[in-house]
Length: 96
Image (cartoon, rainbow, N blue to C red; front, top):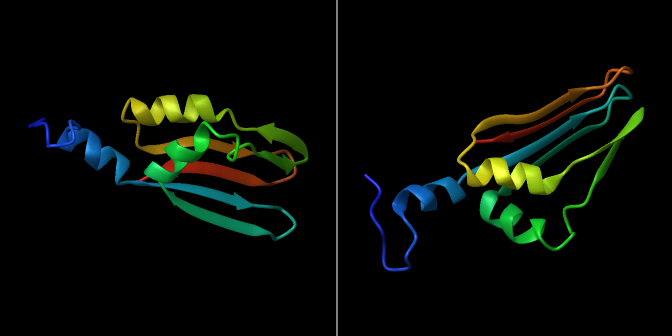
């Protein structure tokens, strides 16, 4: 059921924003980065430029956060981006 609450957001939409975005980077050199952010924080930061990132894994990977946010707005869950570079670096963005 998709009921509206006092703030005008639906319960369905509210639950979507209660999820986490997980960014994982495992480099061939042995570096491991795991970042877990609430989707509300990602949404707030995405429009500010604070989320601009280039991931260097042999070839620079620039994440287009507007496309990631568009997928999240449409309710996408699971793995949104998964990259394995030629030198063995792995990058993934998952919504859970």
